[in-house]
Length: 106
Image (cartoon, rainbow, N blue to C red):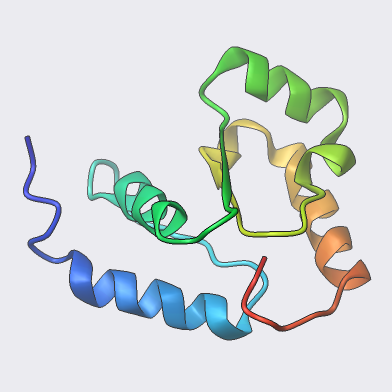
């Protein structure tokens, strides 16, 4: 098991700060460095947040079937492994453009 607390404090703080004024935050980096763990930690500390994992075939199929409906959400939404369904990128942009609130929720 990895010690996820070793470097997570700075990254976690930066991610929460970004979510304070940015509708979409991308956690990008090398494989196995803790991106999904950090995202899950943020979701766990955000009441009402939802998480969707595109490495689950059923979730991936739902995303492919109706990308626009898939990304429509009023709160914080974690989409893990988004590279598996690149068709989600334009609906995410459209959703952000449609709803311009900057209240810290995405």
